[in-house]
Length: 217
Image (cartoon, rainbow, N blue to C red; front, top):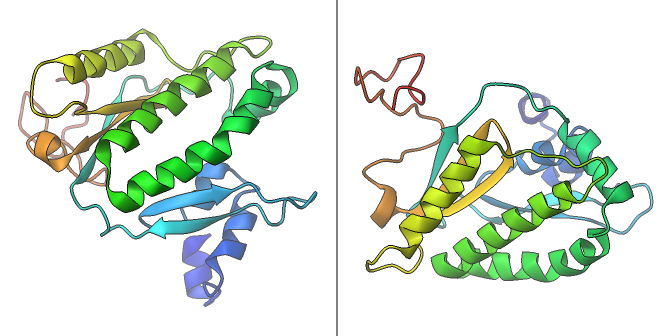
């Protein structure tokens, strides 16, 4: 949609375009913008005012790094849209989720604007855990994490608890079994992380074009 909007010069109102993209997925509406993006729920019954907007551009927090670990190449058993519709309909935790999300979003936006990594990491991990609790209380339960992704979370939490200068060094967040993201400041991750658009060199052959860069490490 972004490319089409640019081609036809329809990018004057990216918020409106995000409301169209949202009908495909929440990730699509957020991805129309660069940098840090919020997705506002809106209040209209038809959902037309549920759209995304930019909090800060990609240059705002240059020290932040995202390390993506692909732990499975299998498709999700339950697609995201189907899963969320089932969760809304059956999880007893939905009312609490609706209550806490607005204040959590405000706190996260403040952490981003202030570049407060410790607050950012705490909120990231808290919300990721809350999301999976929602999935587990859905009928029937939805399990997006697998043994490998749970091991990644445990590893990062142990890394955070290790003695050192920073109280929090990484913030694991997972939404699907295929990958686990870890958000780290540049002072921690510069030696092992790079843009998610790049490929990490293979640990065995040191090649950037290896077809198995994540699995051979």
